[in-house]
Amino acid sequence: MSFVTIRVRVDPDNIDGGVIDGAADLLRGGGLVAFPTETVYGLGCLAEDSVAVDRVFAVKERPQHDPLIIHVTRSMDLTGVVAEQSALFRSLAARHWPGPLTMVVPRGPRIPPTVTAGLATVAIRAPAHPIAEALIEAVGAPVAAPSANLFGRVSPTTADHVLEDLAGRCDLVLDAGDTTLGIESTVVRLESDHVVVLRHGALPVDELDVECIEGSARDSESPGQAVRHYSPLTPMAVMDPRNRVPLPPDGGVYLGYDETARPMPEGWEFFPLGSRSSLPGVAARLYRVLRSIDGRQPTMIVAELTSRAGLGRAIDDRLTRAASGHVLGA
Ligand code: AMP
Ligand code: MG
Image 1 (tube, helix red, strand yellow):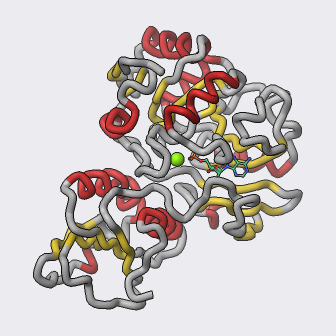
Image 2 (tube, helix red, strand yellow; image 1 turned 90 degrees about the vertical axis):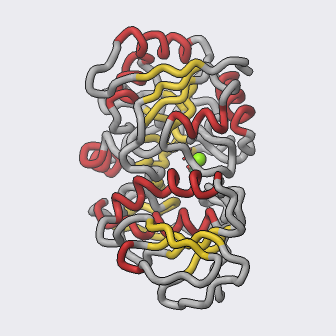
C-alpha cells in the first residue's frame, strides 16, 4: 500500500505529456493510478500484472469474485487480449468506441484470470476521455480499472471523491475535474447475433442497434451486480412516482426533479436532481449529490425514480441499488 497519494491537476484540453508519461511509468512499474474517464474515475493498474491487480482488489476491499473492466484505446492491437474479435464486436466497437460501452467477450491469454475473477470472459471498453486515452496510449497495454471508490460506496465523479475513499491507498490521482457522464458504462455480453444486457449504464441500450436481451440478476451471469451497491451511508429508499406513498415521519432529504417539486411535509427537505427532460444532466450530478447529501448525515434519503426509458433505466437502477432495493410502499 502507498502511504501518500499524489494528486496532480491535468487540463484535458492542454495535456502535460510529462505528467502522462510519469503516470504511465508508475503503471508499468506495478503502481496504482486513479484517472478520469467520461463515466466515473477509475483506479487503474496494468491488466497483465496480476500482483498489481491483486492490490486493486485489496485497496478497494473488493470481493475477488467481482471482475474488473479492462480499458484499451481504439487503435490498440487486441491480439491475445480478447480470444476472438467477432463481427458483432468489431461493428459495436466501430460505432460506440471510444465511449461508455463495455463488451464481455472471450478472454485472451494476455489477461490473467485474477482480472476476470477466474471467468473465461473479459469485460473491455475504450474510454472517451482525453486523459484516459493519453494514459492508456502511453502505457501501450490494457489498463484494468474498476471505479476508484471503496467497494459498495458511491462511485467517484471528482478527484475529491477518489481521495475521500482512497487517500493513502493509491500512488497518484490525475485530477481533471468533474467527469461528464457521471454514471458507469453499459455492460453487455456478446452472443453471435444479439447482446445480453448485464448492466444498464451511460449508453442507453436502444442506441446499440442490435437485439438486446435482459440478463438475469443471477450472480453467475452478472457477477458483482449485487443489489446493494453504490450506496451512501445514510439509510435510503426510493419512491416510484407511479405509486406515491406518504414520507416516513422522521424527516430527511427528498431527491426529486424540477417537474416534481412540491411542498414537503414537516422535517423533509426537497432537493432537485435536475430536470426529467434532461436525464444526462441528472446522471452527471447523481453521485455528486448523493455524496454531498450523505455527508450532511440526514435521518434518511428518499429518491424519486425517473420512471423513464433510455438513460432513465440506468439512473433508476443506480438509485435502487443505492437504496439496497428499498422501495417506499412496496
Ligand atoms: P466496475 O465496478 O464499474 O468496474 O464494473 C465491473 C462490472 O462489470 C462487474 O461488477 C460485472 O458486473 C461486470 N463484468 C466485468 N467483467 C465481467 C465478465 N467477465 N462477465 C460478466 N460481467 C462482467
Ligand atoms: Mg464500481
